[in-house]
Image 1 (cartoon, rainbow, N blue to C red):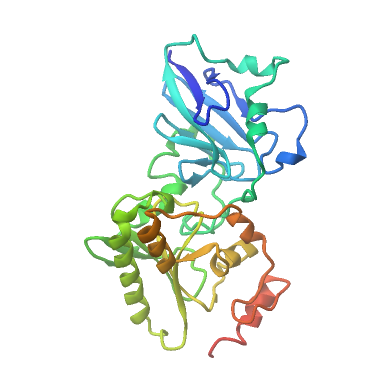
Image 2 (cartoon, helix red, strand yellow; image 1 turned 90 degrees about the vertical axis):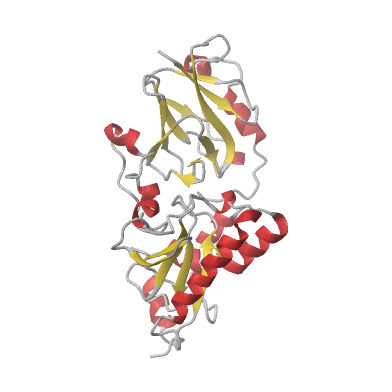
Length: 343
């Protein structure tokens, strides 16, 4: 049977051997170190399936563990295969999976209990505590929306399906192919209604090209994003309430759904699906990046950069997006918004 290795891409330590179906948690220390509070003492649980060639990753900590650009989510689990990258927390400390017959160099899971300094402690020592984002939202379509209700915990028997089209993180890819969901399409993009709209009008513009996230965008995508914005503007122009409502077009800085998607959303925020502070702040703070700003970054830098600590914006107080007056609760905020909106 092949041997599974977890390889640190930043050379924090030697490869760790994961034995077949034996759970291992990362990182491991005897007591929690407050200096590294962004990473839980037990951040993830890993379980290798050496016969089928993948690892099941379960997020235990509150801050986000990611596989490539998709956030796992607390108490959720996904699979990772060779070629994919595991980020221990906040898109930091990358690992890759390797299956091999060579067992001469890796450390086994049993080695992690030796008195000498463990590789997991070494990981912690590399953390410089940059304003790491806190727990990642679930702010976009279908969870089918990055901000829809969290997905049900995946049963162990289903864990090998998480990389398939049926897994919640792949929901957009499924919806964009469904004719019943489509409200517009051409040879480059498709528009669908957000299943959990956060306003009276809330559409998603998605490219047919497979682009996982903002981080995957490069300068060659500029024309595509400009076309997405034109299509979004077209949706606004055709909206029957365009004369009395304002709209914004933009992207969530750290979406949980795989596949780039442009939000076209009216600024009334009159929707029963807008239920909590994360929903609100994901659309009314710098967590929501304007379409034109994304295009400008690509044109100037050839990539899109997300600032450290962006997820902390989701914790900000509830403030009216019009007058910035703080409100105590979502119901109070929604009632207040009516004073700014046309009847």
